[in-house]
Image (cartoon, rainbow, N blue to C red):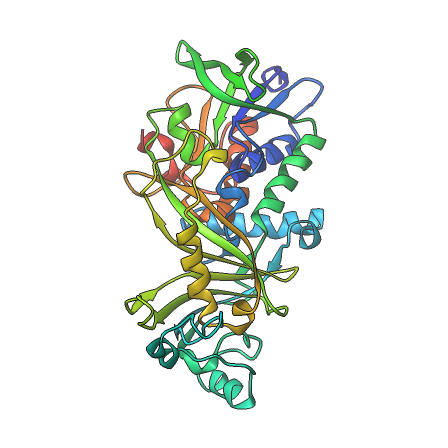
Length: 407
């Protein structure tokens, strides 16, 4: 019993969705005593400053890895019910499908904006006719999905229903988790971790450079949890984490659209200097009349030192806009509200993410979640909190994600 009551000094490095949600579950665990224990969330720039604020937010029971997905999907639902997540962070069940299209629409920018062939290859649809809706129904497109151009449809396949697929707004979810953790006694500190001190194979402290430029500071720690996403190697060089840049945009459609998340394959026409090609953007309708769309990743620009230095390639964002507006009048006639980029963390030698204890006593890892970090954050966080407070992971079998297998 005495060991259970020993003071704990816990430092979480990284204020993205994994770190913020871990802070939440640590501080909501019955063993946490804010009068005795300390939990510090150390973030270099701002909460949800990286991918956690710029991701799509798709949740799915058919995501991966299978060992953590069911737990995490269930926890998303429970968190939304407990804290009003439908209003607070846009939680809602959604439909999900794969749609194959011809990119037939164009945005009319005047008579000189397109050459003659481009005009022949593109069609501007001014009204969603009964005939067009009939084409969608005939192809098996659900009635509610009425914001894609029927004349461009090739095929539609259902991937998920509201019983297997949902969504959150990642920035709102992450900042809410951090705020709810703070309410329970977690201290949020802004600074870049510079060194994790060890003695006799166990962590002792974390040094960091404060964001305000003041002198380096040290936090005592018997438990350090690294949740720094693509920056994990900056904190712990032995971690096999690589980074991939991803661009995305948000669009306010010309009218509210139904709750669908679409994986696409779009054949773009030739013309206006373009070569015909097939592109695969993802399109997620969100509450409050917003649509999120993202394109393929790239490794052209190395990972910067912090999330506030991420370089946005305007042309890649515009490509996404051009692609998704070629299949939907509502998107074509809408307003682009954000062009942005972030870096996604991957486990370099395949598999992952890494969730659990390392070979250093007191050093835990929750990193390498790829594009499913939003989906798998609550499950990761709950398991890490159990490891800290209960000494073992109880809620799932995460042996395949053991960091000791990767480092």
